Length: 101
Image (cartoon, rainbow, N blue to C red; front, side):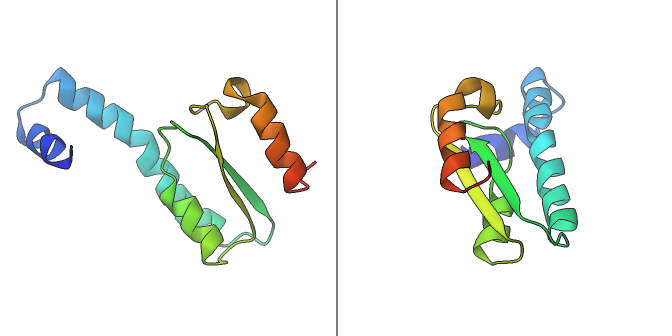
């Protein structure tokens, strides 16, 4: 897959290239935002990502695992980006388990 996208990036502008840039843009912003701003917070942060979410998950996962910030990192089963809409029962279970509510 990486080779495929590398080749696409070298092509003149195409709809496929445009779609790839659109889909990658939000994850770039989220990763940059997460590292830059959240690492300095002095409060608990609870990250929720859908199992098939398009958002960048790596930054949040590393912030939690490295104890840079306190909180939880959660993958919601059977959910995309709109985790509460896609699987509200699972989100509720995670909230209860982590004493968020």
